[in-house]
Image (cartoon, rainbow, N blue to C red; front, side, top):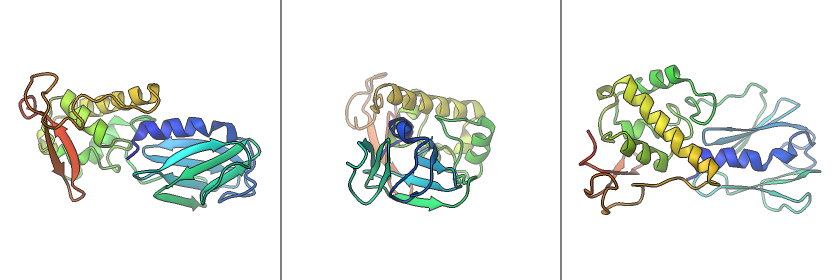
Amino acid sequence: MPEGQSLVLAARRLAPIVGHEVTEGALAGATIEAVEPYGKHLLIRTDDGRTLDVHLGMHGRVRLRPSGAGSGRHVLRTPAGDAVIHHPSRYDVRRSRTHRLRLGPDVLGDFDPEEYLRRARLVDRPIGEALLDQRVLAGVGNVAKSEALWRCRVDPFAPVSALGDDRLLALAAEATDVLRHGVDDGGRLPREVYKCGGRPCPRCGGPIRRDVQGEARRSTYWCPACAV
């Protein structure tokens, strides 16, 4: 699933259509004022107060094609090019200029550490689940979660209540660092433990484990020998 770095790059890809009128598509007749990433969402805002909320889900992609060349169900045609959204899990037009998702602070945006801590402590649960909850911390997926936990030597099954504010903030900082590297590297995230189950830990040599967490049974890769 695309993580926060993918949405930052998608917004940059669509920057040429900002300031142009949509001639065909969900926002037809309006001029695009902004294309903004927020967590795992892409928000395309227009001068008439509408916002197109795009979530890429597991397999979504964003492309900018020459004007008139885009095809498929989800195309915004403009004189500057066609924004083509392939396989989105969400493609909804909101009719509010102030539309804001019910998400936690965006790790690659205007991050609010106090709000993150407040949301993280609303329900006591394993930290590996909390980091993936977009209502707590927007933009983090399985890769950034696993790498941040490993870097901070945190057991993914430790309850949030067992971690001090400093460790929670360190986890957010490391997840941010992973995603920023992904932005700088064209979308590829650095991986020390993710999808390395059974291989030796790069730090201690012990075996990396793969476990699943939460109702969605999302994968977590971690080193039991390193985690404290």
